[in-house]
Image (cartoon, rainbow over all chains, first blue to last red; front, top):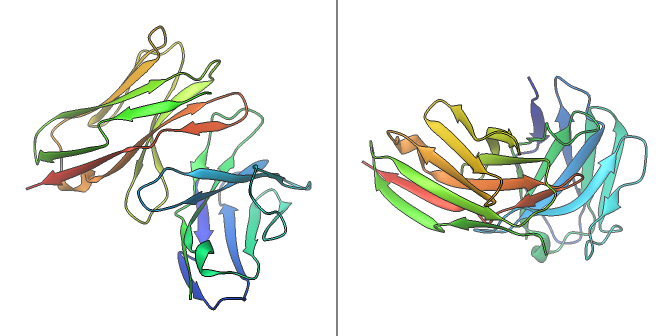
Length: 116
Length: 110
């Protein structure tokens, strides 16, 4: 159990366009979902935490108007990178938590975003 | 500042050999400590999860240990395989967030 699906696995887009990444919990209800960004050979950096039905909480330095997060249901969260620029190119990973405790974090397979 | 430090940064071993990866942390209080395996271009996959009261946890050829007194954990890989080549990340949970180590990049050669 505890499978998190992330889509797409990779995407190439032009500068100035927007890209949406989906994160789904397939076999459990995720009250909380997390979005991370990872640069080559570095660890995961938390971007934001989203709870179903409420606004996401962004980490310091993350532009909430650029990285739009929606967590409309207990099984789906989306991250939209708006007006993408080459510096937004990175590996984006989501994770989902089963409940109030943070015991059961499961990660998605990641999305490689390349902005040209 | 709460930190999770891993060593070595990188490691090269021959197929069939054993290896041990280290994780030292200063996170306090913490809920649990996890080891993840991350293949290149993929998301992390959980190997073990231990609460502060657990000393050891095994998952196949992977065995994690935890010493909550010294705030150290290790991940021992037995009889390494080529498919073990990946980054191994130690993650310590605060009550409401995860603190990631920088990882150890393991390469297993035939």
